[in-house]
Amino acid sequence: MFDNLSEKLGGILDRLTRRGALTEADVDAAMREVRRALLEADVSLDVVRSFTERVREQAIGATVVKSVTPGQMVVKIVHDELVATLGSDGQSIDLHAVPPVAIMMVGLQGSGKTTTTAKLARRMVQRDKRKVLMASLDIYRPAAMEQLAVLGRDLDIPTLPIVDGQKPAQIAKRALEAGKLGGYDVVLLDTAGRTTLDEEMMSEAAEIKATANPHEVLLVADSLTGQDAVNLARAFDQRVGLTGIALTRVDGDGRGGAALSMRAVTGKPIKLMGTGEKTDALEDFHPSRIAGRILG
Ligand code: GDP
Image (cartoon, rainbow, N blue to C red):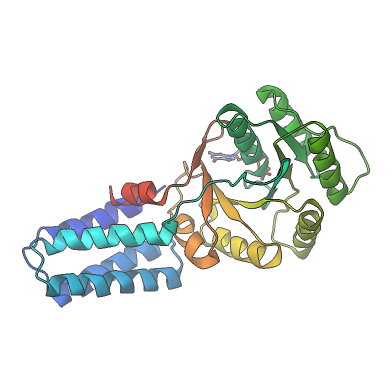
């Protein structure tokens, strides 16, 4: 996903490191190029502005102290600022609560919500040795409920039995009761998405949240949608309240803008990234690793 940006930044910084000394004009010229590269990668304008300004200030300070290798100093500054922008304190899913811990998944239809629910369940069962129950709250698309049931059967992870006629919040309540009775550690709630951001989806999510009192509310967002994913995160956070973001299709040819802007724009951490269609293609989001990947 970051190949293009990585290539561009690499070229710009490589030219800097090959210079013996750096003037303020050199730094300014490089920052103009960095700015263009980030904008082309679809990073939010405000994020680009503050990023290049912070790098510029530190880089100019660095040249004043006549560092032996000013170019390398700038590369280090760019790296550290990338890590800070991505959310320096990389965070993972928090399961520290009285079981069953409810985790609610929200997002648009097709963003990868059901797949990510199954991926997360699989990881918590296999890696973390937790007892996990999955429940689909998508009463509008029986196929979506069935999709989760099929994934559950494949992974040998239980799903809440489907009962017709219940509202999403009632299903959430039933899931938590089943979770309590069955001695589950975690209950994953896969909510219904719609094709566009609408008030109905938001108010339904808010109602489910009020009923289930989830420990985590994760927005599943498609990284290929760039700025739309960032706007979606902001809207969901304001209306429903998020604890984190799961960015999907990071294996695709997205330009990286969503990953780079999400944290700065919403203040909420990217906790997970989906790197493929299979249920094992899920990784924690490590800001320093991503920054390393961007800088090659
Ligand atoms: P939902 O409508 O939000 O529940 O979306 P689904 O979970 O049904 O996913 C829609 C499609 O995206 C499916 O074909 C998934 O296999 C695919 N998908 C989900 N996450 C990823 C990912 O991280 N990478 C790739 N390449 N495909 C994904």
